[in-house]
Length: 436
Ligand code: NAD
Image 1 (cartoon, rainbow, N blue to C red):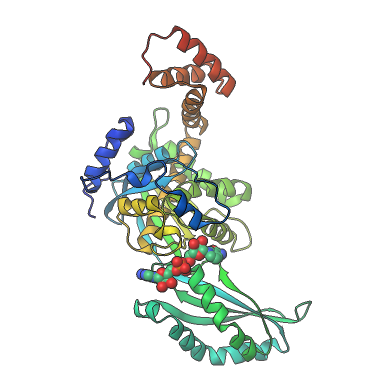
Image 2: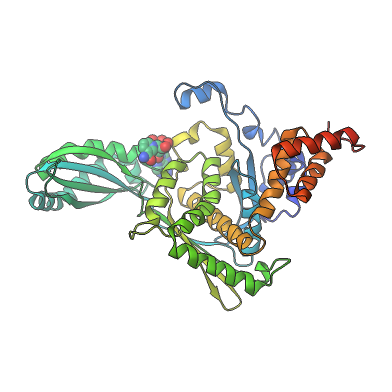
């Protein structure tokens, strides 16, 4: 799918039905049938759900949305998002609009995962490690023969790295063999685990020890995405602050995160807002990516921000580097209809493109959060959305949602009981027609 533009102005003001129509046309989805049936309530049927996990008693819905304005590596893209938190989609779309003149530029590494084979009670770790290194080529050749189709696709086992973990202790001498596997378009966990299990006994014998655990590492530091964007001052300016002021404040916020793990953690949470929303929409293992991201964030011993922002003459440059193990085949993708629609809307067939899009979404939500913090503070926008949610929960529909939310914001008391009070009063006196 080649998309002409991801900039559908006023999309958020349309009704849900109008949005479907507009998006279908813009994304070139088929006009016959309902292009969005895959994200209708109940689209994942109970039988499918029952086959996915254990002890199923139902399915659980979350909103499915599309972030606008993204231009990634020169291509326009609709970014699918599933998230329960208000303001993430709006934040991503706003930041992508600011970044649009140049767009997001990404570099995605080859999709190399690490499988770990632990070897315990190695009598002589140095000799064991040397023996394994001497046999590495033969072991890789054997591993490649186990995955002929993956090898034919240009992937497969690449290298074997041996690390010494302990010379003595409760587990004796401990070595770990890292099997590096290019997983192409698969996330690769099952694939790598199968290879590790198949090779473990032979590897332990060569090392002169016993096989311990054999499983992938989620610290996929060989499978990373770097994404950059560059925003001009004019784009950064807000109603109350000039561009250079906002730019300086964002760069200062980045330095704060670089100095302090307490801040870095929240900074990274803002990145994961965008990343995870894309991962959930596309049925990825977001726990795996989360675990990898945070382990990567403290790879030099201190927990650091995954993205940093620097001032340049007339603007701001941002760069995010993180591990991102995702797949466009395997996992839950073969059963989940919404995830397949998400990939179609994003125009994604390959894992590296999905990783690039998730990372760009992460840099966008990071930028939006920092800009809000640097200007009006994050709560104003956030609480306005929260007020609408409370108004709906109190029973308001149609125009009353906005009226209840506006009153809650005006009195500065955005709480559920106050929303019920305001709604009760406004609905009793309202001449405004509620939506049916
Ligand atoms: P999978 O088991 O479904 O295997 C993917 C398969 O797709 C491969 O066997 C391959 O033969 C095939 N394939 C078809 N076209 C391909 C292409 N172009 N490139 C690559 N492979 C292609 O999925 P997986 O990716 O091996 O494992 C992912 C699943 O494992 C996820 O559901 C994840 O939640 C789960 N998991 C994760 C962990 C962890 O992260 N620690 C541990 C265990 C399982």
